[in-house]
Image 1: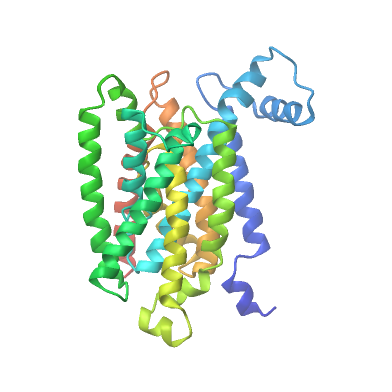
Image 2 (image 1 turned 180 degrees about the vertical axis):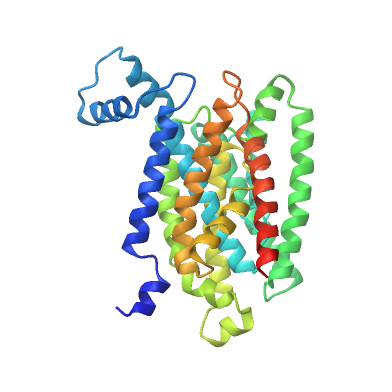
Length: 345
């Protein structure tokens, strides 16, 4: 392998450094909280659970394995998924303000989940899926509707047309969500808190679902790095070098929709992660999507784990909604990154 090709891809050294940083962040988030736990004690609790030697009634075991670890895993996987979706959409649409919600799929998934929570609506024949099933079904339905409308307006599925339809659909979905919240009755508090984003009730089953979705859809997005690099110089140029523009768009958008639907169904509405994290990673590894996409997986996980830690510790014992904290931090970071980029230019 030539030096040039090694620089283009994400090297083993890069994977090692980012993995160590992610694991260190996960350990910090598992140890920190209203009841601090020493890193050695936390690692002992994890090892005891792994090898089946845990003692019943051990408070450290309960805190780490029962409460904090599943939440840390869920926040890391949600952050990785949302960041990967954001980077993929920014590359696909060639728009630095794009993220996973640009298509309107996030609003559609939120609408499905809110309907399930507020009115007890479930998928016929699959009532056990509940909120998750409704969010994923609504995400797919939203994508189908958005693409159908965009195709009706422009058979080439031009980027500007997709963005326009996505923004309009998001406004419509958010209006319906507001109506659902107004008529949610006794479930108003639950619906309102969910729309602000939270991973407080996440369990190992949620983390496993996120892991499977990230592995399947993330592989599709990570393998699209070359095509997204070609999109950077325009769709016509991408088409001239042999890229199936429409096929790549559909593949990326479907993968993004699935990941967004799963994340929204588990964590609610968590904004700014997919918008800010790719810009932060781009400052470190550059704009090449073959390096950027793996980097945002790790940096997104780190960002949301630390943000979730802040949400549950800043005003402890009161817990802040995760989506509110990500929006506050993300807005400030985005302004800083934007001003730094302008100065460089």
